[in-house]
Image (cartoon, rainbow, N blue to C red; front, top):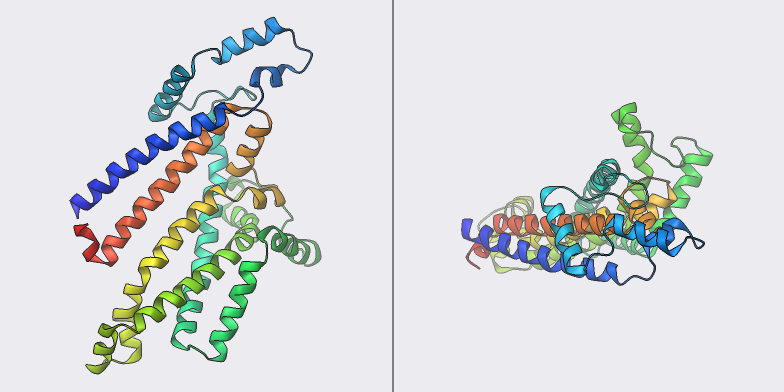
Length: 314
């Protein structure tokens, strides 16, 4: 198991190195000059050059890359060009919204998808199976931003159970913060639960058709015992993959939902950084999200090895 983990850690480090180079190069080729954007169209060339020197934009790209990456390693993400604020502070302020939102949405989608997928698989061809698959297809087809606006109309405007947007801050109380994230989490969880339920059903159906399941039934185990002791654990491998990918998407891809609900999360920070040509913010946040995705993938690989010991020898 230790050898398996070490190999995955080496792969993680190499992935982060390659990703950092790609992120830096892609963002560097974006059109527009941050200094010119900050000073406006009528700024004098001498003033622009002075600001570029102050921001370190006149240094060569290799120097800027190594300065940036060494700062990331030591926890110094640099200073925002636009807000003149440490990027680490800006990320910390936004992460306390985006991370709980992603976890909340993932928990909701898992709580919905697991029972739905299991019921659909164990009652294949029944009315329950057809209904669950029908609703899951609808959940995949409905855009989450449209569903978010429906939730706002029904539960915020008409019923007034939730606020239409914004975030009061965790300092106002855990319940108030969780309540503000409930509608966005539901909007994010619907398509993810639909996908996860379909994967759970498909994987469990494949596992229920294996020889070891039939052998367990022949030895006298009940359907419930066979399901929980043998079939479900072996069916979790592809499901864990989807859960890992979903968490990465929920953390990095919630920009539309954050804008619908006016949530000051990481998604909106990236959008603002791109629109204002704040390169250091965009580079740092994107690299942080890449790091989160890679770490989640690593944890999924470890979960694979726990669920299926045969993988540890690879």
